[in-house]
Amino acid sequence: MLSEDTDIIAARIEREAVKLSLSNTPICSVVYQDEFLNSSGTEILLREYSPSNLKYNKTMLFFHGGGHVFGGKETHHDFLMYFSSILKLRIIALDYRLAPEFPFPADLTDAELALDHLQQTKGIHIDDIFLCGDSAGGGLAASLTTKLITDNAPYPKHQCLIYPMLDPSCSSKTMSEYAEGFYLTKKSMNFFWKKYQSNALDLKNPCFNLMLSSQTVSQYPITHIVTAGFDPLSGEAELFALDMYKKGFNITQSHYPNMFHAFINFNKIPACGAALNDIAMTIRGWCE
Image (cartoon, rainbow, N blue to C red; front, side, top):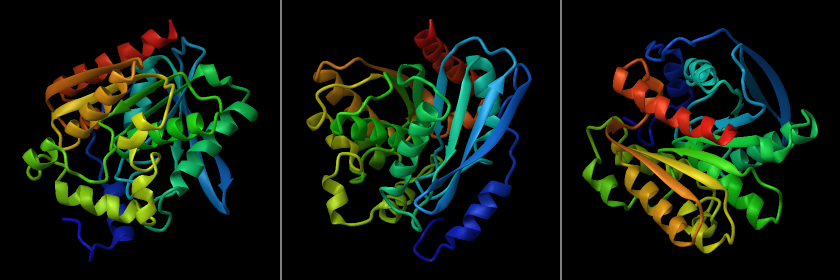
């Protein structure tokens, strides 16, 4: 149980050490390679996954979940090995800086740096880059998109937000309905937002409080949002999707009523695997 007394460093080590082997093995060989960038004096890692069945000349920039406090290259490695193989797509995953040592907007700075690196160093055109993330990583993808648009900068034209973490108020109906007993808890979400926030002004920043995005942007990429039935975050994601849809943006949503938060990492379970295959089909459709 997370609390103010939690030793976050020890909790990170413990989480990364747990190997549940609940992600399928890749359907083909996948090679991964690490490189490092310097972000504000801190070394951050980019891990590139290249499947042998590579079919599409597109690249996904992926942001892992973990409440902006946990997660990294090990927690999502098995999933990304499998995901790249069923997508037939190159994935580059960012191991961004974590709160509370590096609160908002450190991870957003890292995400923007990674996107620039893909374009300037790797020579990948912005239109050939997809954004994707789960939970806090889904929120980070949306945050990066909002920042690029408000800065009048080029932005990727597609993003997939998988049960994204969007609302620091934690006030949605599902946050109360599924407050305990469904893997992710309301208490944990309050803990994550508190550690991630730098100051009170963050709550008025649409890159932090993503529920303000629809009031801020006049354009938006094609966006697919994934929600799970037994997930406290599903309510805020649905409200976000509805607000964006009402503005006329191209927003689609896939809702899996029998799923729970973090199900993509449990894709060896047949129902979770089937849902992940649905997500992969949508993303591959963007490549055709």
